[in-house]
Image (cartoon, rainbow, N blue to C red; front, top):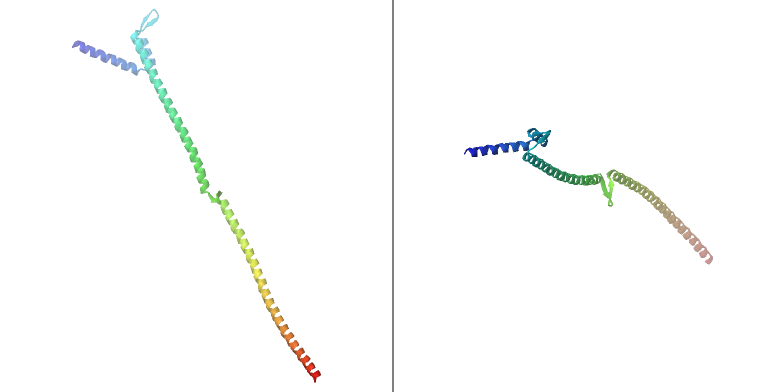
Length: 189
């Protein structure tokens, strides 16, 4: 039983030493190894087990650090690819925003995207030109209508004069025929 208790203490002591060794930094472990080693003729004598233990701890630390480096490198690559993806999405979104703003500030005229201010200017200019054309055509129509009205009045006057002239001519002709008939009648008698 005494041996079992000693074995348990020995295991606990070694476990505690191992845990302390693993919790210490590599530099601290070297310092502990040097401090606990014996000196012989200016040299430090280190037990092989402690040296191998330190070597194992250093190898484990290096392996952990290499794993961390690989993990961090993988995370960096993922973040870089994510950044590239987000940058591409941002560029696409900016292009879409520019197109959307263009559509918002523009109007399609005959299949061509035109700025609203340009469209308004063109529309009001066209409206002004059409109004001017309508006014000019109305004035020409009015003049033509006035000319036709005056021409009709003059035509009636001319027709009336012609009718008067015919009636007078007919009256003269009738008078001349009577006179001629009277003369013929006079000669016959």
